[in-house]
Image 1 (cartoon, rainbow, N blue to C red):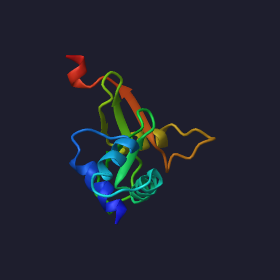
Image 2 (image 1 turned 90 degrees about the vertical axis):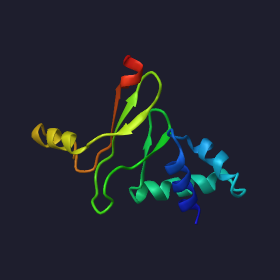
Image 3 (image 1 turned 45 degrees about the vertical axis):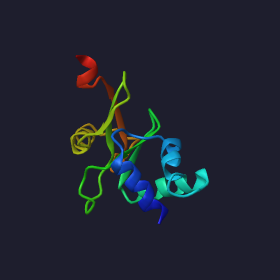
Image 4 (image 1 turned 60 degrees about the horizontal axis):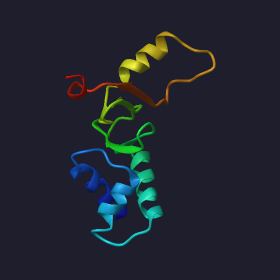
Length: 121
């Protein structure tokens, strides 16, 4: 199945990949059109197995137990683009404490820009 191939590509990568980087690696296995990879990525996002960073357009392997639903929260280095998943429950507790009347934070995504430890040093 195409989703399995895409998931394995993401798992084996030492860095987070863009859709076209995934496509390039996928085509070494079999020839596909870009839409095939995008469909697989969307399916993996819906299943909660990966997350997409909208800031640097890469895909990140989910670190959570997949028996429970969670809100994706990503930390992204402003300098090198390294991305890591962070605990979203911290933000959920904060959002619940400071309710905004126009927003429902039961289903949110958050991206935090900072410098990674490597870029700070």
